Figure (cartoon, rainbow, N blue to C red):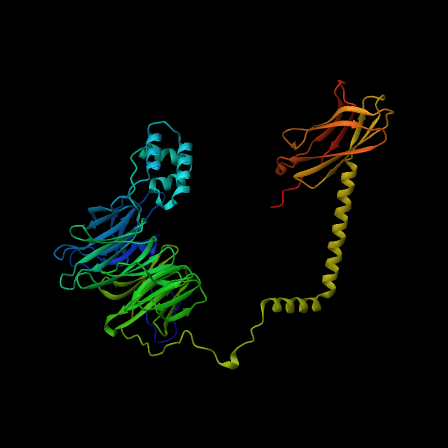
Length: 576
């Protein structure tokens, strides 16, 4: 709930909480409007449920839930529209590739967008897996190959879901669809445009993942107009009358805003934004949009910037506000725990709340024309009504420049860090020196301790013959998991030794050698030889260790000439 404001010119009433209901849905799945003929305006919410379960369409009246209906598919967006004056209003629910029309909360009509051609290679792969000619792994490889040739978005929705699913879900998709795949694009957003003021009916506008925009007659559900965009539309806003003059503003995933009209032949974006656009609304004859760098921009229909608002917090969404009795229009910006009302020049009002916000919706609720429905993150709902005697004569310039004497010197970040560290060293110089000496002593102690441990676990040499006297010494370098083993050999024999090998033996579950067998063509008497190999600890997390043996063997002897037994240290983790 909102914090009490001691000022007498509060614009909104104290919030009234809906304690008996919880709503967990995005702002696109919320609408205000009548459901029955000549009834009050209701709050309509579409719940997406969890993994396809508990999908429902709920209607709230007053402070309680009034009606509920079951949805067949997860909703993307809902819309309240009128297609016949003599009958009750309808609710359009965009779900997957279809628009589900509900009348009196009962299924009335289902419209599915036209399908697109399927990639031949993709279609053949699905038919082959349905007939058992290939398995699910081969199907994945074929789809990955198709993705390299064409974009991932050009695949059918079933193939996209298949590539993003685990093995169990993949097998379930194969069993359910098999070779019966279709390329019906998913609906991304919907809106409506008034057909004419005389008729009072609405034209439905649908945007899809295949960059198509369809204008549908809400009575016959036939296509009246069609656009093909170069990018996927995510938000569409309609303005005007379809029979007279209309405009459609489309925001795409590339942060472009298109201004479409009836006679539009060349598609050029009206607004190109360098930052990602997060929300878009229409306010009178202004476009208002927010970006991920917390800026609210007021722009004309042609894309000319009127004003910008730089905010210090993240902007969750925008909601248009219009009070007809005073012809007052503004935009409601939703933040984490507060909302602000802006027009194109001033900050009009601020309302703070004690809980994080999810979304707000402004419009007619019940019989009140100016009602604000506030949804918190915990699912609770608060209702606030706009005061008829609200005074907006006191306004704040949101981009007002401060006085010159109040400006602080802008110190560079690196300079500020240097000054802070200098002041800290002045005050705590003795303690910093003592801490440094302590850490240095601990480091030296750890190094000496590690060296002593490695020395204590030195190699043990075993010689099996006195005829061929050979000395062997082994060094282990590295903390792990990769170690370097250096073997030094020195022959004391009177004659040179030929045709020998160095063999490395260890527990194969613990260590792995890069070169387990090193050939030695000759060992000259009195001359030292050094051989190097690498070994890797397979699983350092187990903290396992074992002995490693280095054997010098001759091709004509059954027993090794000399053997070195090395006790390996514990391996450290790899540095990533």
